[in-house]
Image (cartoon, rainbow, N blue to C red; front, side, top):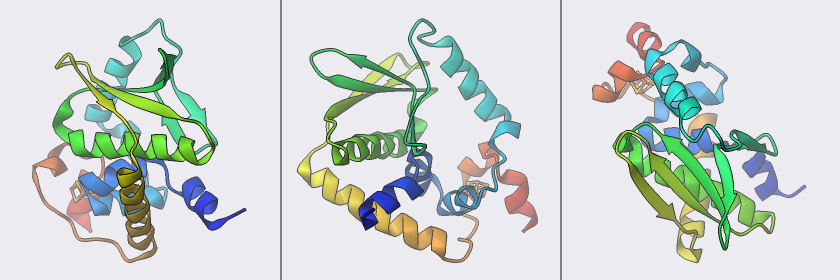
Length: 171
Ligand code: SF4
């Protein structure tokens, strides 16, 4: 088993997303301090996910590392993610790039689509050689963060809707 495979098994798509949202959130999540199920904003997001595209096969997990909402095939394999809104668009973009990168390392070529259900907006994502290098750098940075000490509380408007809000205000 090579180092890259070990790294890919350790870092999930959610962790890539949290890298862009909040480094502290990434650190907490990586240590299995998971409060997501208790947060009403997360529950609303899950409900939208359940109700969207209900006739399509959903929640496909690959190698216990990545979780894709659904897959369809046009002239290519398309991974699809359904999000509530585009407020975390950058995080969503890199999460999808990571999925595409992950699959490419196993010889599967795919493209991605992110659907923002409330905004009725769709974004198509293609993996390039340039962003493969970028993903590798991000994976290195994620490893350093999760092996380090607890990052500081960022105290932004994001905190009010974050599942770790209570934890951050008491530590
Ligand atoms: S409450 Fe704020 S600082 Fe704490 S994990 Fe969430 S976003 Fe990060």
